[in-house]
Length: 372
Ligand code: HEM
Image 1 (cartoon, rainbow, N blue to C red):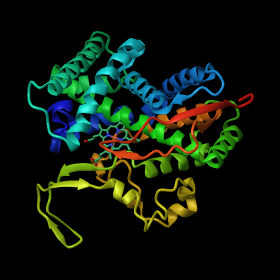
Image 2: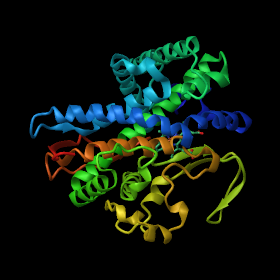
Image 3: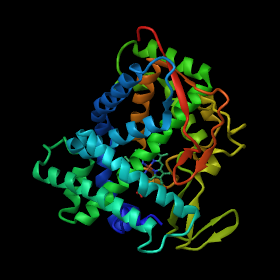
């Protein structure tokens, strides 16, 4: 189903030595060491958003998911592809094309695949072509101005590994851009929604930030001093079920609950089912970061919480990136603003697509905090 978007050469379809080699090389871009160097970018883009929120008139209404997806897209494009995306014009163009493409992909989950040449298929193809040419521009620029050693971004690792196979390079660039932005944009949307509807959790997070960081920015050197913030992140991932499932062709014979699963069976890993399993998560729809306190973690098997996938070497390559990016945005905005829903009674339901998003825009308003 994803093939038209990512292309047949995408890492998603790469197996055995090819898949392993690519993962090995690409994972370097998201290693603990590389993530350190992304913090200043996360901070700059978060500050830009905080500045915009500061300039709003009192009680102005903010469309949360528009703001969070825009933040996540800008961060993903700059960290993975570099300066070519320092111009907001290209980011907006990417976003415009992407909206058409993603809407069509989600539609194919529940409706038919459009006929070739139909208006739906044409719109999809056209916007995909434009997205590919934006990435091709990046690839040319990185080839013309190769980075110095130690300063390589994700796209440089892809170019280095795949030489002049532009089809593969563009496929993997789109795979990571999509994987990296839509997920974290929704983590932040759900995150601020849960915090707006749980003011006591929001206040506790704020107290931790000012006690531990005072007026310092958050980065790799001090992020571990915010254990409650980490608990909040984990509970957002669990409660919102950001990625409800993973899928693959099982490449070995196995048995589960007495059922034999022959090699090559298509298997869906129902990640969302385990994240809401009442045996481990009583009142599973309640947002409660204390579920991840050190005492409570001890009482659960590790596989009960795997929002980034169960499967060893194919687990999500961007999990460190996602934690770091979302934490910087949460810390930056929470220390400056109290966030509330515009309509306290607004009920927001999840739509479980490829990524779980709210069924409607969430409108929030903010109150500036004093002197932080
Ligand atoms: C909170 C945010 C995220 C969640 C919940 C999430 C979740 C997942 C899950 C469940 C999988 C499937 C694992 C499997 O097949 O077993 C996956 C794969 C993947 N994710 Fe993420 N992800 C997130 C963020 C990111 C980020 C930030 C990036 C890129 C920087 C990314 C890139 C990818 C890619 C490329 C794959 C496919 C890996 C492969 O096939 O080897 N994801 N993700």
